[in-house]
Image (cartoon, rainbow over all chains, first blue to last red; front, side):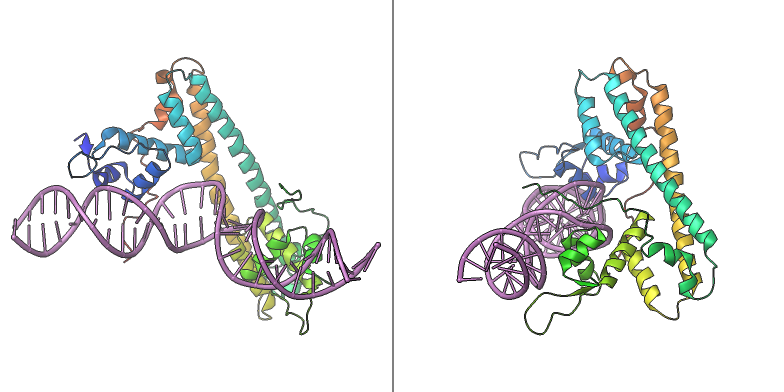
Length: 149
Length: 149
DNA sequence: CTGACATACGTACCATGATACGGAGTCAAG
DNA sequence: CTTGACTCCGTATCATGGTACGTATGTCAG
């Protein structure tokens, strides 16, 4: 049962057929060659393993681009374990940053909710008040200032 | 100084001109009428306040869609403070879910990093091992199973 | 052999939050 | 009265991670 059509590979990996094709288009999976005479492409068990690898990576917060890097590391015999470890560590730091940001948001929301009377007219609502220009909390500049050309 | 062109409004609000137009297209900001004879649209100070409101909402993790809802609540005289509070509370729960997910990811990454020898061949690397089908950690089904038509 | 599926492939579309571009019109300073 | 900066408007593009559609072709069970 190690060779199969795309549909079976997809089911085995727990994804949709279109997802496999999407990964092929994006170089995460190699597309098996089409048989010389007629017929469907034949997918090896390796494809299923690769898809599972991708999904596991996503579970850990890696983007498809980063997972593609991990996959090419895997294919390279010169890769040392430390290469992989470094990436995991970088991702851990990223996760920590996100956690810090979310924790800040959480605190702000909780504070606003605690201060909100919970009933009555809107003008008394501290949450709305905070959303109105709170004058003093400078906004992070999401916009570009310099032109690139 | 309460009336201005789009560029000044954008600078006052700390965003780009295109961002204001984007918000207009998406119904977050009302586009002021074009003057009957020639000329540029005139933006009231209210526009700047609205943009600031939007950015503050984003800082708290609200999506533009959700912010649009908050804005229409704001416009509705029948809105009670509790309506706003409920939304903030829902957002808080969302944030808590994200925090829980990220915390799980963090723990998994940390565990993998700790278990990884840190040097040597890839086949000994526990991180790569975990990404290979770890057999036992069922993947969350990100894919659709049922067809909607 | 035939009908019901599956596959192959290219392309379009979804949401999210913008940013960029091109051409025409307008305004204001010098 | 010219020139440079700004506005207007529609459309296109970006990144992310897929999903959907249409048409042609292939496979297999009955």
